[in-house]
Image (cartoon, rainbow, N blue to C red; front, side, top):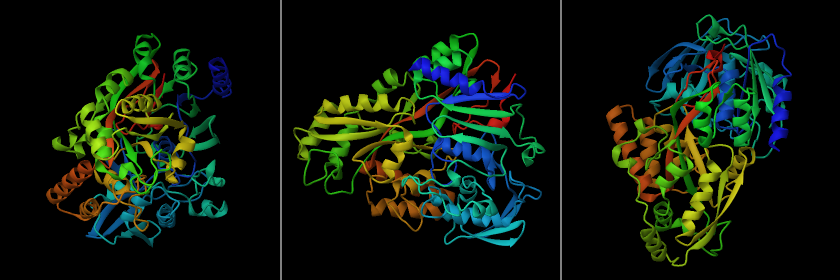
Length: 525
């Protein structure tokens, strides 16, 4: 199987003409779709932001910089005005105007969109003229500009022509023209997308960012290949069949570093990995407990927490490439010392809590996990299952690739699950509103609360923080919200990921905390 994968990779990479400077790179997963709003997932977003621009963008230090908006102004507490960049064209030659902004934000707010929890708080868009747009908000949004970095701008005319005016229903396995095609204003043009095989991009010579000095790289073509097997990804890099690996296996990092033709660049990612529980159903879908739901009892959730030996996960599975945490925010800068404290690894306390909750002999449950999304995700879940078995919670691990795993969670087809959350924004609100809040179809809040718990006290604190303009008051609301979440153990945090990037020695890439490969700044010598 390994030999076949390498042969396939060779066929893919050598099929490109030799005249272009090509970056061939790989990771264990694959972009879920070319529709930029249908899946809010790291690799999918990375490709979306390469093809599409946003109103506000980030440089490689994650500092906010002008994008399709050259400037902005807060007119009053609930109105923002953006001045748009002139002379910009989509990849098909269509001029970019305010109509595309209005269309994109309305499309991103559709129920099928996984970005609606970001687009809706920016406000309702209205065109002032071709190069001016205003957003009117129901309530003040203190992180409006942060949210504006997350909505990729599409062509209204292209969407109408191809009948993709709304985001595709990914969890329903809908296929549209936007599944494999895209038309943005970004630095890269989507050439081909073959799900599970490869994605090919070519440099956009007319990108406005070239004149701004943002395209400092020398790569003309990008060939991305999904290589799921750890050993095969490493072998492909060492043999020179790929130039860059986004997620080298931790067990192979030292070997890659010691190899003459390769190197490793390390950095901490803004991402927290955690477990969640079905706290809504009266009976779990995947458990031997009938007539009730063990995870509705906070003592059971605490018992799971106490049963996890986080130091063993860090040292044996992650090989040091993780920072254990009791916090639930992707970035530690949004947390506080009290929130970072973990419940102690204590088997006896775990058993005691289970007995107090009415499960002295434990119970059976299925733990759902991806096997190609987070660093060593499947290995972590298998290890945790063994730890839970020691306290009587016999855990069956069910793993799936991200393409089927995330739609399963969207359907709430789970009893216990692994999830990670992160990105470029370090503000706590981008975790509080979409993940920790109860589900609210109007605002999009709670769209990723797959446990479907409802905590009115937590919701009130999150809602207050979302609109509080005074920084000191807002930080206190965030502190209280995190404390309430942790007291109720709605999720069990594991760690923040340390991300090594591996590449050939002739490749230069800037490691970013959002784990996004900024392809227009990469150099291959």
